[in-house]
Image 1 (cartoon, rainbow, N blue to C red):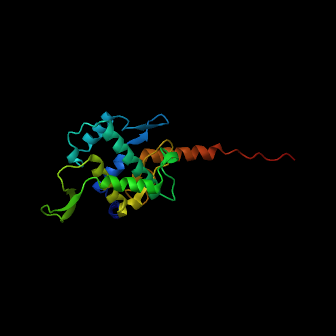
Image 2 (cartoon, rainbow, N blue to C red):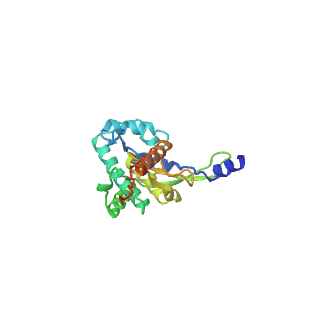
Image 3 (cartoon, one colour):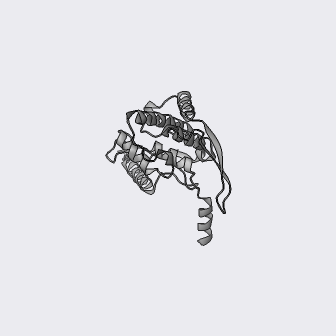
Length: 215
């Protein structure tokens, strides 16, 4: 049992900071618990709250009070990211949250790249004690729009091998994208797996029973 557990543990995947931030942006569109979809970025206050919750990965945005212009820029970027998520999970189906209104891929790519280019960056070498050196790209001018940071994280994630682990969860009522954390993962979380299994069970037992023909 211990040997099997060690194999499973070794097969589990980690999630990069860029992947986590990009996924969290996409997941601001989520199931509302009542059969519909809710948007955590429906108002500037919602965006301010979301940025505060990501202060560790968005230090340049610390203290941001979002306005309508910033909100529109971020939700426009999110639309591009979700369109590219839908492209990444093909031939699987995209999240049903916005499957009927996805941006065309060329438009999504143009929007993402243009947003990332809003601020010029320079490579900075970081080398913490007892760790490998890493390169981080920082603003060459000292300040940068929130959208540029988010766009560069999305580009880094979508161009990385992590993209191949991206899936849309199709459990009943779920509209989430997720990254597989182990090879056999089918659902974004255990509760979705439970709902999917229950739905399959009910579907099997809904099949009409064939009656013997009268002779």
